[in-house]
Image (tube, rainbow, N blue to C red; front, side, top):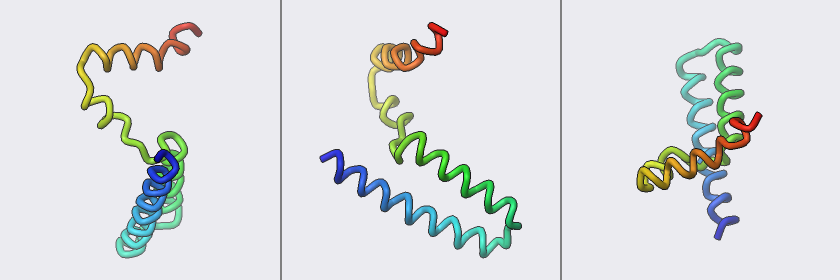
Length: 79
């Protein structure tokens, strides 16, 4: 189900976040760079909820991808 899928993606994101924190600590990144990485990770999660939209679109036929992209960008074009 959708809820189960979201839960799995959230757990994968948490694991990735933990790995990233360990990597930043290991590489001794300064606090300002660490904060930038954290903000980027948070932004990506909020924007996609862990769904790789590009991978989904790449699996579709070209004409269907075009129609979907047109639909998603229609509001921008109207402005």
